[in-house]
Length: 361
Ligand SMILES: Cc1cc2nc3c(=O)[nH]c(=O)nc-3n(C[C@H](O)[C@H](O)[C@H](O)COP(=O)(O)OP(=O)(O)OC[C@H]3O[C@@H](n4cnc5c(N)ncnc54)[C@H](O)[C@@H]3O)c2cc1C
Image 1 (tube, rainbow, N blue to C red):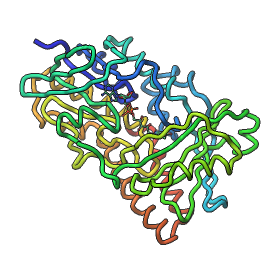
Image 2: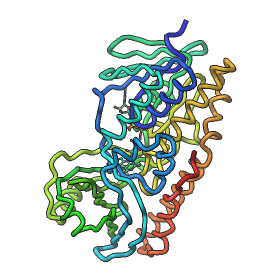
Image 3: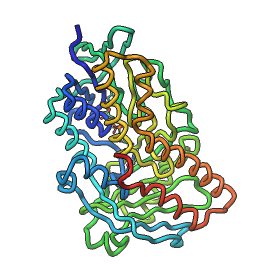
Image 4: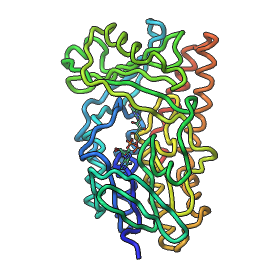
């Protein structure tokens, strides 16, 4: 009656992590991706110290594809150093990192079809039907891990778009630089730049033979973002080639209701991002794996009710708590910027919250 137990839409970290765990549970799993794999994703590729969770899940293979391990972070305010502290982090290229998790899903038994854009999703009380250019597939459950512009969220009525206040826009580019030059300019540190007249931040994230330069702010303030990015790059004496922009959700879906009968959203599709720092890779993995736990229970007990699917929030409650706390901090940050009250002690608190190592798994 069904082609699959679970269809996962989107092979980013959230979707691949969900598909891997579903397949490991023995669920017949299909992972659909619109791009040709391996695909890239606009991103700084920085894992805060929370990387320990991810290494715990995927083992040393993750460490093998690290571009750089940084020791610290520096934050400048209006051109003056505000904070310099230890902050051991891992820097990745997303093309390599995401494909590692997708390969894990394949090894676990999930079927992956790339170049396969999902165009429609229909979930009724009996089944889910997912339409793609390569044909339609049926399943017991669909997981929407298709990012900030999720088609699953739209077609199932869970989210028809983020408001400008609840979403950020970020622009980035990987720019070649020798490792010697990187260390001379930035040390072995990720660097953030804050300005009194800008409610957002610029960053330089050092990698291996290149730096990722970027800038991000809420969509409602993003009118001249590309100009700011160009000026930033010029100030650093750099020349950006492949410039990419993408949105980042800044809030969980209302009341964390990222589900309905037979449908569950994870990762960016549901707003699982630490909003103050715009970190969503690890939250996508954690929420994707929790989605797989829900699917396992649902199939085992043949219970596809919304109550069953709402257990997802419980399964990732520490992450949900951190996201909510960070959303409050974002409000404090915006207030402090507006009234010029930003102090190093506040920025230190913000960084401590993002340093949630080892507590989500
Ligand atoms: C400029 C920028 C910098 C960032 N820097 C960082 C950082 O340094 N650290 C960090 O932790 N986070 C960062 N983020 C956030 C991070 O990139 C996301 O939170 C993360 O990628 C979310 O993962 P995901 O699996 O939910 O979605 P995604 O990674 O967006 O994956 C979704 C997948 O779904 C596919 N898809 C979409 N629609 C369809 C469809 N209709 N059919 C089939 N497939 C579809 C897409 O092609 C994509 O592969 C940054 C974001 C931006 C924009």
